[in-house]
Image (cartoon, rainbow over all chains, first blue to last red; front, side, top):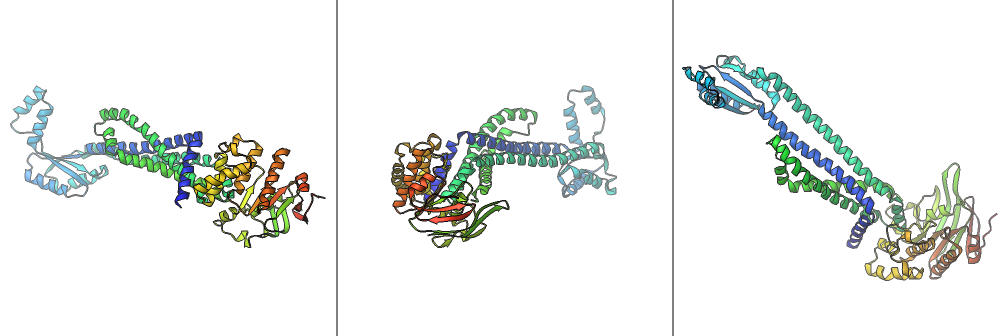
Length: 302
Length: 227
């Protein structure tokens, strides 16, 4: 048993080396397949965080009449927080609103002077509400439009931003779905190309396989070395693919970071280095072994 | 030892390779199967190593019906039969030494036995100096010697040779035939399929003649006589 296994592994290593060009071609095609898979995965990571960033930028603000009591507003705040659609609610008192206003218009003397001349603070207190999903803003808006809050609420800015919010939630939905479909199709094409390369490589050995069988080799003794070759193709392809990915990310990462500071690919790579290596190598090995095993079955029936 | 019983092999309605063929091969016999191209010689040998299945009939090897064997049992049958082919069928990515050693690895022999037996068999077929060469670096005669070395290195009880000299010049042809005679004298059963009249007449052993897929003569010693 051990002797046979030893022979199978040795023979697989030797074949990998002696089939130089064929091995190189197979490894390169598999590298491309792995690169496609990893790019899809990383693009998905970037896309998800972009969508997350966008979704966080969408919120709904309710402004309250100047005579509304703070206790009433805070009561509404805690009621809103208990809704399952709501992620967070921020209370901005009229005093705080004034501070923000003064800060934002720090350079505008006339505006500041005119607001200081007013005896009362003209700014309304407000609640900023962040929903879990952008499609839920309509529900929250209709909740705030109930009769019981009529005397309290002066304005809901959802109606003003409704078009923008709806469009964004549509775009996010479409991007999620079409992105998933496109990645599945692309990943499958990459798989087919790699699979067919291995099939062609084994096709070129079909007579050899028949000879081995006629000499009396068992199915395992014949297919074993091809499976070992498949494992090697996977490991080497994974190493090559990483040698492309690391420099690419170190070039693209900082540019993307300047553009969208929320997305730090280099940090992501650093945090997930080992799981990415594992993901790639396992992917490569499974691809190599599955293709070899599947392709060789046909020729074993002698 | 080997018994063909009413064997027929029909490929399609226009092509019948064998029709109701029956004969027995005894242990340590040297049997030549002769006939023109297409007479069914190769088909008969392919049936014995279970490379193909007959349409009708039974084939017994050591009292066991080959056709009832499961595919997992076939390797064990083939390990008892050394096969030699007209086109050599060597493994192109293995050296002469490795090709011969492969037949021993298949049987599960130890490295020590392999290191001991392979050089001796390669010496026997006259290839002591070519052990490290790949098949593409060998001549036709040398390739066939490697094939013979591979067929006999694990000491099978039968050697079947399908036109082993078909691609060789006269000198190499006689070297190969002398090797087969020597193997037979050491006790191995040999079944030789050929259409070479000179070889058959010089051998003076049993001859089974096939014509149009049927046995027309079976004589011991026989000669090459086709109608």
